[in-house]
Length: 495
Ligand code: AHR
Image (cartoon, rainbow, N blue to C red; front, side, top):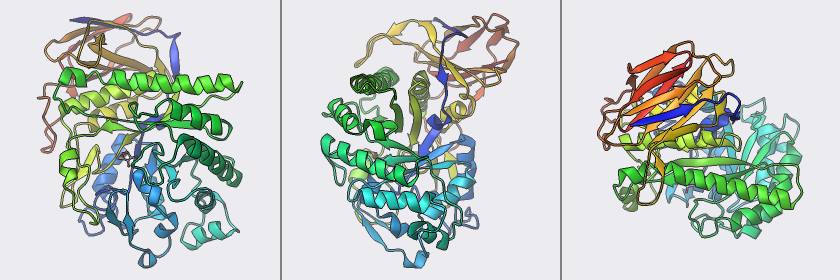
């Protein structure tokens, strides 16, 4: 099968905001306790943080991490998680019906985030709380000194403010499962007033209003319109969340699910812009895809979870090869919308629907999905070019005209390298991909790799999965020819 991608120097989509390679840590299952923090484990550093986890997270090069939830945040009292550990209360976490010990809290997370070279994207509780708790938290984190909350932070060991710039005002407030779930009008008013007060404390912050928890929410569309109507001038981003699964064991359909994400993003952009037009506003609302991933493998197991445990095994999806292919495609989809998607968080990071897992001895290991994420996060930085591609297509249960080739090119800031990410969706046919240099002049090949040849259901618990070199590449000044294996994830870097 033949396919072509033409690089058009004069058709950039946008510069990539590095925050699209964000991730997410929630107080849920073994993400924090056992995952990030396990003072008993041999792998713990002097702060009780798992050093092997830190090393793997650094490889993913994640610039921002959403914290502390998720559904958890809608019942969270942030004040419980600061101050001397022995005074911190044990609480019922109603979202996950677990026990929260609060032995890891705001200060610990800030310290940990620094160790992995990342920054915090803080979520505030709009379920059981609202304006007051949110404005106090901004003051605690960002105000220098001389007020009750800023001095409390200093007393708790952080002389300098945390300076957290990106704030989620609530989580999935459209979802009936959310503690304190609201109608769009109720939430729209609340997010407007809360964001306004938070920005009065620190006008350098940016805020994210909750959009829809999924494209198939019954309120999708009207939720966005109403929330934006109420809050347009006081918020900066609108969120969207999306998870995928292959419950039907239909791989061609599963690998096409990037098209669903594409439709979701385009729909939310259209709604944001329609409100902009209606309000005659000069300001555009951009998108924060602050939860996305594959999530379905653990559903059955989680249905039998015993409540009120500390750090139970929850949402521990073990990912396989086809999941990694889809994650690659979802990353390409995010890049295709780099002009409007400015933040995206792979949900989540450790032990809970995560690229990184820890075993009972505290050893950390990388799941299949770790590899495409690592490549795109490290090399997908710079300017994204509009993908002008030609490819034969197929139809699947939910999608028509699915191109076998899914691809994108990113030019780095110094224009010294062009990186192409490409998925061959065909399960049985290889692909001869021609990269047309357009007005670029290729000097030579920097690197070509492939993730290929595995059974769709193969997982990486034994650490056997590897990205390997692709030697089937030839480069001239005007183009390159690359052979893509059937069902493969590929990266081609050209000088
Ligand atoms: O990431 C797991 C959960 O998925 C989050 O807590 C929630 O926001 C979403 O429904």
